[in-house]
Length: 360
Ligand code: NAI
Ligand code: MG
Image (cartoon, rainbow, N blue to C red; front, top):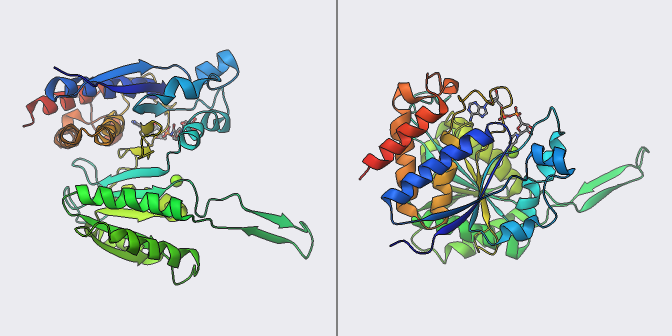
């Protein structure tokens, strides 16, 4: 018997979010039939532009209470620029979750999948498979600074990088812990201690201190400039890459771009202490240009479900979903039009559910 269901808040939002989120749920249903786990889904219609048009705000005032007790948030894509300006829809929803739920880890996957052509020559499935762990609350993106004597010859502009021991150590602990759970047990730290001579040596110092707690994790570090070059020339060197807010922002687009999958690899916004729910989402938006046609690629939302399963401790199920995605993308007839295939959204999902049932 299945006890302890995972409580998931489901927020499809706008456009193709409403089409791909149900596909992710179908896969989770298949997971619950095959693996020893159960889910309880609560569906919410807020954090959408339709809600905004009715209520004049993106979310109800008590959204934090409504969502706070869930184990995770399964999020689609928010935004419908024809009716609501993007800064209102984004800041009124996703940004609130990230901040108020202290989701200080931004996790991105970079894995080369069959059927997706990598812009890097001579790389095939299996050659690229790593995770990027970005610090998401402090570092270079601080609001400490200012401008004095604006518009004069004496104009001065400053913005400070803020690194706290709490903030640095908690992101490093998450990254080392992730590396320890993976087969290669290898962590790479992004630094720039030669140029940024106060905060980055501090970051390096904390990496070294944290590494002592994870003796079985092999680790190294590179300055951000050569690290960016290595992503392109030697993507097979990496397993888990941890970085400050700014470096992580850049690497978490560069990594997936190297796998040709900026539209396929999902993101996790994670509070590892589980004080608050973590949020799992595709990186793509609501795609107004194809919304309503049933041709959106559901893979990124389904992969987001896999990342969520991993966070919930359902590691075997998570790995099985990623393998099922991989098996299906290898078959041209199940690819959606954005990947050059003929499949409808639902046909791609059905194939993934079938592959999942067949695994193991
Ligand atoms: P977008 O990602 O929605 O679309 C860019 C292009 O990629 C479009 O041609 C679209 O058809 C295609 N595309 C995206 N996802 C796809 C999928 N699953 N299958 C097939 N094709 C796909 O980005 P865009 O057009 O800049 O933004 C549209 C709206 O989405 C805006 O309101 C924007 O603010 C919002 N947005 C929301 C995000 C979020 O919720 N995290 C992230 C990015 C954008
Ligand atoms: Mg970015």
